[in-house]
Amino acid sequence: MLKLNTLSGFGSGAAGAAGGGVGGTNGYVIGGRVAGGITDSADKMVFATSVTSANTDLVLSGVRAGSGRCSETQTKGYIGGGINNSADTDTTDLITYATDTSAANTDATLTQERDSLDGMSEGITKGYMMCGHFLVGGVTDTVDKITYSTNVAAAATDAEPTKLASPGCVSEGSTHGYVFGGEGSGGNTNLIDKLTFSTDTSASVTDVRTTSQSFVNGCSDLVNANGYVSGKVVIMDRITFSTNAINAVTDADLSAARNFCMSMSDGTVHGYWTGGAGLTDLVDRLVFATETTAANTDATLSAARRIHACLSDGNV
Image (cartoon, rainbow, N blue to C red; front, side):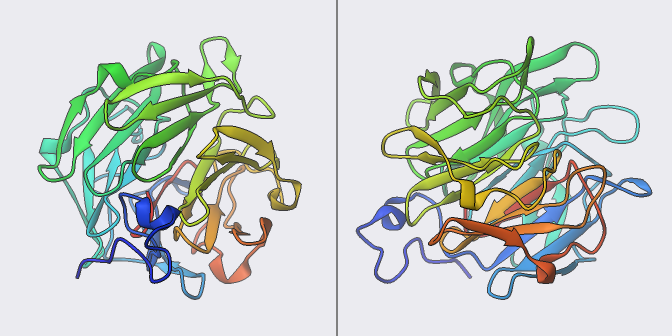
């Protein structure tokens, strides 16, 4: 069953303007590195309760860590690229939310095999797999655009930002997305690039993150039109979508510094930073209304993991 694109009471606000669904039902923590090596397994979080448990129906077509992700927000999401036990891959799996199942989709195969990428979505029309790292050759600015109606991936050369590995991505949901930080050719960076969805073009933003970081991750509050990014250190940065302004939000700092953690959001109430560090099952929950963050024991992962991917069925 399709989700509504707007919530009652928000039809003329930020949520109503978003191209994707808001008020998601479930989130997914997929793949990554666990104690036994790289995995194809997944956890599922019920957003209404913030409770997480292993989901045996959702198994990737192969083990993968450091993959990109994007969500169509209503019926399906995508996990693309990453590293298996010995090499990078260009495989993209399509996750069907109604059945919690995953399968390789050859039409959505990425144009380059790579790991340490991230992704964002315009909403219900298209998503992007951003940047990454080659096992041989260093960082890249490659962007693949997936058209949701056809599941086809193709290079989007005008959307290429700075060459980056392990950046964080957030999306406003209908017009713009942002690529934060990451590891560039000269080391960690605090730069931000803004992607305009209508033209598939990317340009630098003059405001920068409050600290230079790689291995960061972000998620979006579609009701209040903000994005949040954190990870390698506890600092939480907020971007105001209407102004591109960046501000540190100290009450929203993570409970512990966790590089290689990954994040997701229900789109309206909470954002979650999952796993990370050496290996941890810890999940921090950000309350959008108060901009406060705390560890959430109900959301603890079924196994400690890092360099995984996260998807939400109600956010971009």
